[in-house]
Length: 248
Image (cartoon, rainbow, N blue to C red; front, side, top):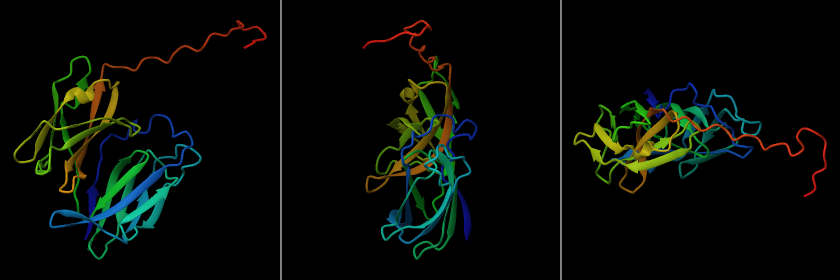
């Protein structure tokens, strides 16, 4: 069975790739494949994974925009010099533990990029209220919701992380309330402080039985009325525009 999975569509593509490159540093993507057994996430070895991005490379070093790899006996494959940060799509082929082909689309990745591909795991786009936060008059909390009972408190409160348009983690906090049906949670808006005007990615993760975290879904939120300060003025010319000798 071929399934299309929305893994994490956390930001609109418009303006997503604004910002600077990585300054010539080598990028790295770590792909790990899993399957579920009795609700427990287990490593799924020897899975063939294909990845592709249509975002243009940010520099002349990290130019890989598509690949095909096979995870090792631990279900892990490492790819370097890939185009990051960028939005990727992945396809994982069937294995002895996963009798299906899954495609994960709209995956926005920072650098370095951990990519966890779980057989048959549906991760959805969440709803955020309010969708726009006025920095000058913020609400006390964000409410994040879904209609698939995605949020779990069995092993701990879900965590809510916010990333900027370059994939940089801005802040993370635990939810302070989760509905009994797992369809809604709230998180204090202290997360939104010290964030300039722009669009930010929100990722909600559930705590697993082994203490690790699994993505439950993603969303985006806009912050307004907090424009970044202008860049500093250039240093004055010590010679006032004339030729002179500077002795240090």
